[in-house]
Image 1 (cartoon, rainbow, N blue to C red):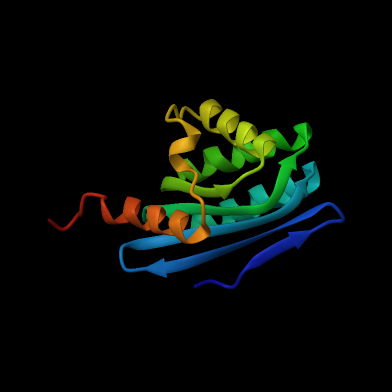
Image 2: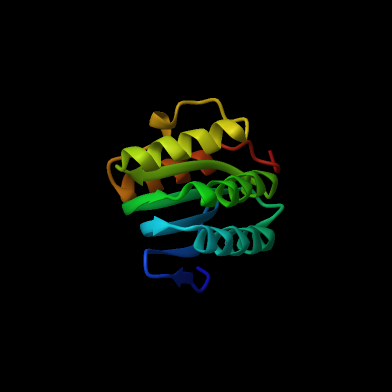
Length: 147
């Protein structure tokens, strides 16, 4: 497990941490409140720095958005860049615990902009534990390079 990276402003916060598992690494993001453009820019930079340390090994991403509201429109481009950069850095899948209708719609749009056509509903779980289990399942089902 890496040391967590976290930032906050008066409207929201995030925390990123990489966890080691038997089949690979899982980056867990926790979001609280709303994301403005400054916080979203820092999130993008922090996520891509963390992803660069993991690459080229495949990894999965989970987001605990149980206390997340949404991002302001100006932040969306930074979040899209973060998602796209994660895919290029070896992220093989994502899983979310999110209930904010606005947040879900924003996430679906970002995934679509990055060429992910699967429905966002397939990646949303009722608990963080279930999202984590789904992310680990993605890693476990990757073809092994040694077989």
